[in-house]
Image (cartoon, rainbow, N blue to C red; front, top):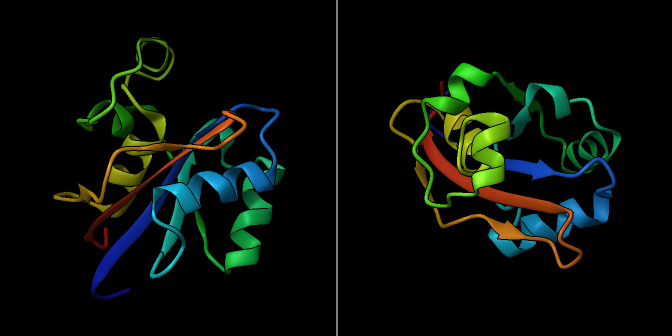
Length: 126
């Protein structure tokens, strides 16, 4: 792919629904222009995320722990830092998937039911 990557990164609870992921994405800026969705490896095959990806005709990029830890996030959650080595799973996965030099379009957004977060990053396609 040529041009810029625009990736929505997600963090979510196991109980999160596709609707919750859609809600978080809408709050983060919406799906327009996205080239991929991203999350941490262990959540990349979650049915709710795969359903969202299918509905948007987008691939899901699975981000490993080393790539997460290399990202500087605007949000700093002590829980996420302990569990994943980053302050925000949504922000870190978006940044990592969008490529070196990517930037967040804004801080993460939380779904109304508080089970999902999303953040969007833009950068050169990795």
